[in-house]
Length: 196
Length: 425
Image (cartoon, rainbow over all chains, first blue to last red):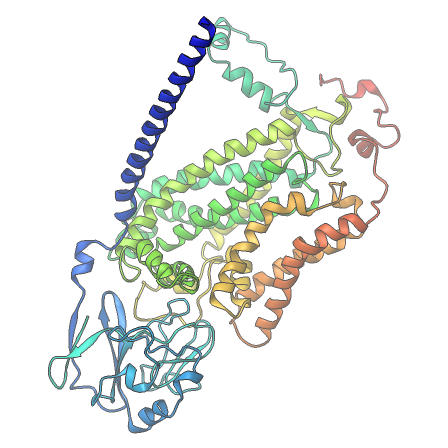
């Protein structure tokens, strides 16, 4: 009888001990994970980087056919004053036939088709504003300078791995998976653009 | 560690006293003086010692360079120039460190090829081999991080391209890749913040490498060294004590290696680098032709051979990860390719393919270069995934010597005059 009682006591002890071990381990695991978080999060963009989120540009001096590059969040932004031919060429393309059929416009939802209208502002079709970073591996495509190679579609050409972009900055041929990103921007006046 | 009787005899009273408290001298003697070494090792076996030397050189010169280097986007390029022009002997220390990285990779490629040829990855050396693959990965990470520090055009755009590899994960989980890249950069583009953290990690990783090297050597001393015949040490006649035999051979090999090293340091310090890295980093201008350092070119060629962003990244990482599995992919029971008449040719063609990929990685990604890169990439993977398992089963190995001693001495493996080697084994 005594043995049975001992056994019962042991079993009961074991159950209570199990509970304590599991509870304490779980507490330590959560604590450990919580301690890890600041060490991971510290690598994300800090407050001063986040603060430089927007920039304003006067586009009045850019003549038709010219393009300028400005810096926004440490990235180059292409602003091209497109000619009539370039706009017509961009408009004549069926968005669903493109390698990437999404507009990639920060101001529009992901599902918006990559039509020329969705990559520019209504009534301001001559202005094409987009982040000048190839969506393949981050090089700066050629095509801003008047004498630059502009690729087979007369837009931009990334010399690193051979991606061709058209006059609306859409990927047409090459390894890049996406169209050049159009950042969210707005016209403060007729010639003043605010990016971000 | 390895199972043999150490001949360590504490001499002085101090050595006795120490031996009873921390027998470190006994361990060092057992592992590095009278450790049994196959008597037929060739000069390819000196590269382990050479690699240890390279690691020590990189750590010593690196610590000194860190005393003068400034890890900010404004100052990095100028501080490296200051090291080269103004700091006392800075030119020498910087050249040794920069050339040292190349020599380190040169040595590690020979070391890996040696392991592949003589089957050093096969049982019981699987863990030893996997630790080696880990060391190779750590070296690549360290080399990549270090190349960013001079903050020239190739540094900047190399970081941009390589960190952007992670954005290919967007194809699996939209947004995840971009999040990871922003996290790595600490901003929305490669910046001073990125440089600073890369410097911190570049300083850390060599010490991690040193730790894994200790495990690598430990694993080596448990199973013992492989040798050109691939046979195990069976009798005392098969081995010689590490000191002086292997030690002296290692030192001679190291001496020849240092000649080559010094030639580059003094006569062609920039030959292995890229001229564009003497143009300060400019985030607005991409160099027309971005190439990594020469030692990454075969893997860069594999990346570019696949016409899909995610596919290229997966292929490039797989090219290294596949090495972990070769102890089990190779089905042959014979270790050394010396006795594998068919496999030998496939292996030599594999070595040729890696060199060809290296050449193609330095060429622009267009036209015939891409087609050839695809051909050699296909062979690279076919070698591990098809040839290794299939040839191992099909092939009839050629005649092998019965023992290591026989391969050296011929006949029955008994020295002609047993007293001609009076040293104690």
